[in-house]
Length: 508
Image (cartoon, rainbow, N blue to C red):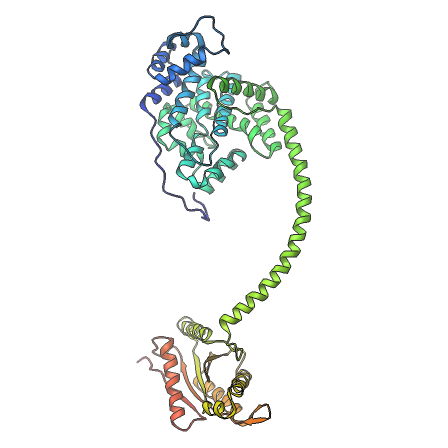
């Protein structure tokens, strides 16, 4: 599914690096429910970075062992299988992602989200007596990795992608698909990073937010735990809070978990803090359920007060906008008039005339509706200018425009083509009707003198016309104008003050 708007053109995918083989080996070993402590220790010891990390954790004040831990086998025995698995897979995944840097993406917030889901999935697994809670931990840890991969592929959207973390469950998935074309789950499952995980974990992760789960009972159980981890994480990071809390409480009831939502969130918070301390990750203060609800209520009250202020400001802005809109409409009308009207006569200009002529030609081919065209030219107009002056000539042209509009129908278009030449387009008009209209126009100009100040100026016009219909063979608008011009020249050459007509070629 891709964006409508796209506004939104998806850029070419960036190259997502494949994880180093050594790290993938660590993750598979730590994720293997049938593996042994000794096997995991041997794999961990093969990675220098992980060796240093395990020794640092084992010798940290948090564990307080009396004797210094000097090698990986000692660290594995001292820390225990569950702790070593958690730290090994977390280290390996963070190391595999270390080469990925996305501007505008908050890495601390991202890893906090990952740990929240890892701790949530693991605690849910412990509460429902799932055989290997660490599998759920590894799955939860990977659930959000696709967000940074989306950011890598679409760096211009990285900040917006991470902001979608505040949408709960399926709403987040749908919003990501609209924004990027894929969800963060789909992005991770389709990447080389997913190959770090054992097949069962890959399959379970691919089914997160998919209502129809398939596969073994183990895969289905892991999928439900991962979805549950998302639901619990939404209580802390998503909105609206009331809906997120209700969904989390329904989850605990469906799993027949006796602990309250507050107790479960406290367990997740404590587990996250322990992991963050061991891994030297910046984990923000984790709120209790009461604090989450109180924060939500305060936010609602704040939003209500802000809405009232916004409503008042909006009302004021609307009044200003209405006034600005009126001014803009008036300004746009002036601009439109400048672009489409002849400034002297107020008639449509040649640009509008040409566009309308093209429209009439198109209408013939679409609807079999013919039209007629008149070209009108003032006879001996130079004499008017020479005898009475250019202001008088301008006044004659303005009066001529008025008489033409009165003589034509409302549906006809009258335009000034330039100088003393005018054009008239008569839609749906036969040659007979057009000739009558042209003669009526010629007579209206000839019969009544033009009163310009104290002077009476006699003016006549010559008119050339042509009618075009579905039987006409016409190459385009220029040919129609040329035919009317030919008729006009004929009228001029035969004494002026008359109407002459051209016949276009017809189909044989």
